[in-house]
Amino acid sequence: KRNIIIDCDPGHDDAVALVLAARAAGLALMGVTVVAGNSGLANTVRNALNILAFAGAKDVPVYAGCGKPLERELLNQSGERIHGKDGLGDYRFDAEAERPQEKNAVDYLAETLNAAKEKVTLVCLGPLTNIAAAFRQCPECRRNVECLVIMGGAVYVPGNVTPAAEFNFYVDPEAAEIVMSSGCKIYLHPLDVTMRALFGKEEIEALRCSTSRLAQFVGSLLALYAGTYERELGFYACPVHDALCIGVLVEPTLVEYENTAIGVLTAGEMAGKCVPGAAGGNTWFGTKIDSGRFVKLVTDMVSAEE
Ligand code: BDR
Ligand code: CA
Image 1 (tube, rainbow, N blue to C red):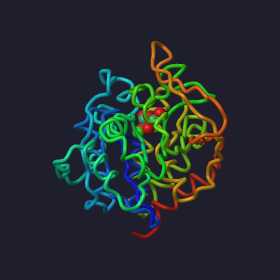
Image 2: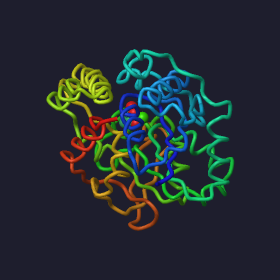
Image 3: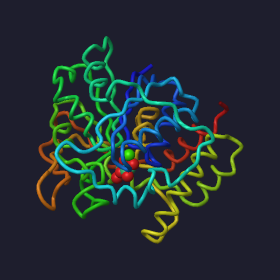
Image 4: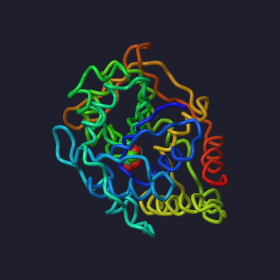
C-alpha cells in the first residue's frame, strides 16, 4: 500500500477526496491534517472529522493546523461564496464530530515525515500553509516525501479568484512558493485540468438516487456545489477539483502531465499566479484529463458495496 497524508480544508471537493481515500484499497491513509481555507479552521476541522466518520474512517487521526496563511490574513469571503459559511453548504451529519488530536498538524507533519521508515506521499488539497510551515520547521523531513500531489494553481487558464490566481495559491501565495520550490517531486493539478472534469445534472442525480450511502452523500454534496455554480456562473454542473488528486493515485493515467518548473508570484495583483519556467526538474503539471473516466471512477468508487 502507498502511505499518504492528506492536508485539506473541507470544502465539498475535499470531502469527496476524503471519501475516495477512505475507499481506495491501495492507499494507507496515515493521517489527515487540516488548514483554514474554504472556511475557518474550526469549521474545516469539524468537517474533516465528520466526513471521515461518515466514510467509516474514524480511526484515521485528524490534526488541526494553521488558522491563517503564513504572512496574511485569511480571506474568508471567496471560500464562503462557493462552499457556504461552514465550508460544506450547511450539510448536516447525524452524529457530531469527535475532537482532533492534541498535536498540531505542523508538528505532526514535520515529526512523522522526519521519522518515516518508508516514504510518504503528501496529498495537498488546500492552501499550502501547513506543508510550508512543516518544511520550514524541519527541512530534513523533505527527504522522506515520495512526492506531493497538489490541487492548486492555474497555469495556462485564468484563475478562479482573480484573473491571475486559483484559490489555494491565492489564499497563501508565500506558502505555495515555498512548497513549489522545495525541491520535492510534485504532481500539480491546476484548474487547467480540474475544470475540464465536471459532474453534470445527470451524473449528480445518478449518485443521489443510488442505493449506496456514500454515493448519496457525495451526490448531495455535489448538488449543493452545483447549485452554487448555477447561481454564480449560470450553469448547473460542478468540478470536483480535489478529488482528482486521489483519482490519479488510483488510476495514474487519468491525467497527462508536462514536466516544467512552476514558479509562484507573491506580490500585488499577481499574487498566486503560476509562472511556467524551464522544462525538466521535479514538477509535473496536469495538462489533459480523461474526464469521462474520472467521473466513472468517482461514481464507481463511492457506489461499490461497503
Ligand atoms: C480549490 O479551492 C477550493 O475552494 C477547493 O476546495 C479546491 O481545493 C479550487 O480552486
Ligand atoms: Ca480544497
